[in-house]
Image (tube, rainbow over all chains, first blue to last red; front, side, top):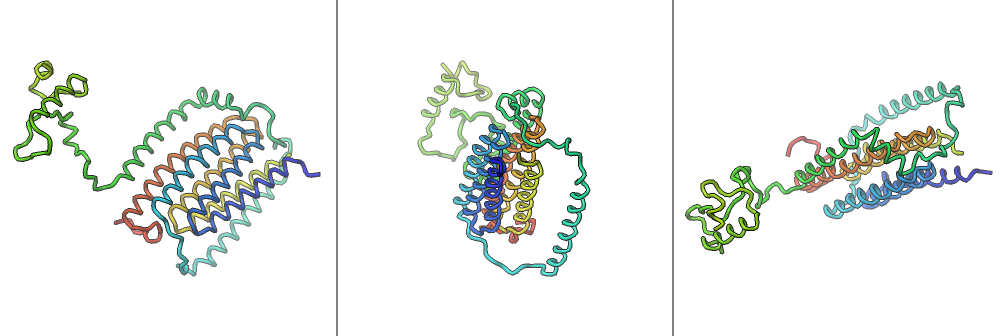
Length: 234
Length: 100
């Protein structure tokens, strides 16, 4: 009689491997992405069999939800074509690769036979029954012993956010502000416009009114030098 | 009970499939997805050891690996969009010269 846990392992493990192979062999990126979602869901089920429900939920929410939606969005946005078949470059490297792979497999087999005599009492037989995978234990560990990695992660996310925006922004942004704009401080409408530059609907009267409104509502962070705030406000 | 080695073997197989995908794929997005697969294979190892040895540390690091993967997804897709804008293609063979 095969135990139920082994049946579940074979089921979800086979699903994961099958979806992974499908992902690599697929030439349409969208089908690849959907196969990868299958891998993620199968792995989440495996985490459940390993008594890690919190990680399983996060796996589905973060990986299968957020990250894959982002990937599919980019695939749709860029309208990616299917991969074209092309003749392999560097044909002479194929036998070299086969030889190196054989060496690697031999090494791995050697190492595995070395470990065959391991004391079986060292290796646990099954998943623990404690509350290791519960949300409580994970939260306690995350906010006490591993607080520093947690905080470093938040900095990492901030950097990724800034980096992604910088990378994805269009290089020729017409409305982009130059550093001089920031050095000059908030642009008040009362600042005398350079002669010769006429903007539609931008007269001195409306500019004055706008400045008064901004000062009254506290929007203007710093009034222009030479004009104290009380003079302008009154 | 499922032996520990079964999970480790599954993780190794998934990781190898990811490596093979990164090597043989030419589409940048598909290479990116293979990297995600490799990260997940490592996560499976973490969770397996954490569960079998009754130590929560492994699952905490899975949490952190997931965060790093999310950050990597954001930056990586930003790079992919930038490459596509410059070259109108996601083929990494065409982007093999480090200049525009």
